[in-house]
Length: 400
Image (cartoon, rainbow, N blue to C red; front, side):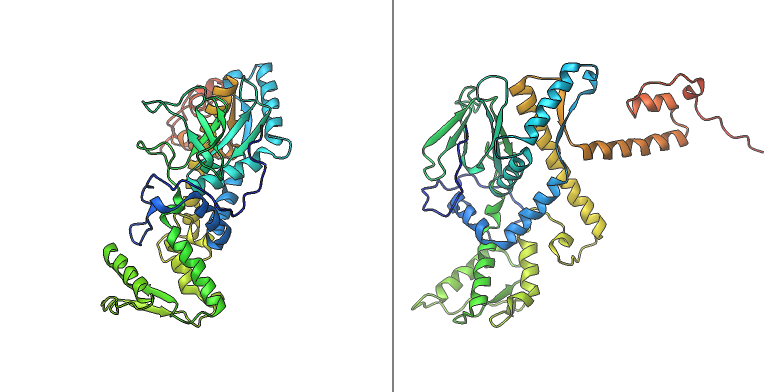
């Protein structure tokens, strides 16, 4: 059953605002909005309007796509004919997850939901039984968990899907083994994770509004970037409050703030295309995903080289993909299908692991720490070879 076959548009939505406060995403040095007032509909609209947010998401998705997911037979089942048949069956499902999509199409959808809403999901059809014929991505903001008084999922109706326009209306229910549930930011005091966008919502809205004002030549008030280094958040909030009152009609507030370290960059008549300073500031401040500056097209003043930035970024992506694979193995192969002889894997991880193991093996052998057969068994996972010299360390060289 495909629950959602429509294209989401901008509609008047009766949505439930976010009730869970997100954890800190390096957001302590700038003003954050009231998280409770941001609805999922607002996040949708923001994604449609913000080129900066789309840029972040595209960089993340493109990097994740490098790590393709496939199915292999476990080492313990290498001699099982049934295991290879199961691999073939699952690979066909990955190639054609449903009549119109591949698994990669679905994967891109739930990863976007994770980066926007903090959670995503995949429904497994048919919902009953231990077979899978189709898979569909479910909008992350429509997923509700059905728990008992102790916080445990109810087995038969563990996951509920609500109507995106009427969030009080449940349109589908899935048992605990017929749904794959992903959470980006797991915390002990919540089951839904946190929506990353909530911590930079105001910055992205400001970016959109500023670009629009500069592009249309609005000059009733100066547009620019106000910088007050080492200022507490309470002062910054007070300044914004006074600014808001100042631009209102008949406002009596005239004094904003006095700080000799404050700096204002006037962008009223600036060309948005040539405005590098504000773009750098917005990109850095709104970069909750820790994307390296080099991938965002800006020069970083930090100590990391371009290669170190890429390595750190790939390390972060790899940790996310590894968790994704664990979830897929648990939810699909173990819980839904009940198999223990096959598993989802990432070939890129295997290649990297083999390379690292080979490097370690060479170092151990050259350092005369382990024999060839010890390395084959303990490091490389291979069988011993029938050669007496393979059980001996390297003889020391004669010293004159």
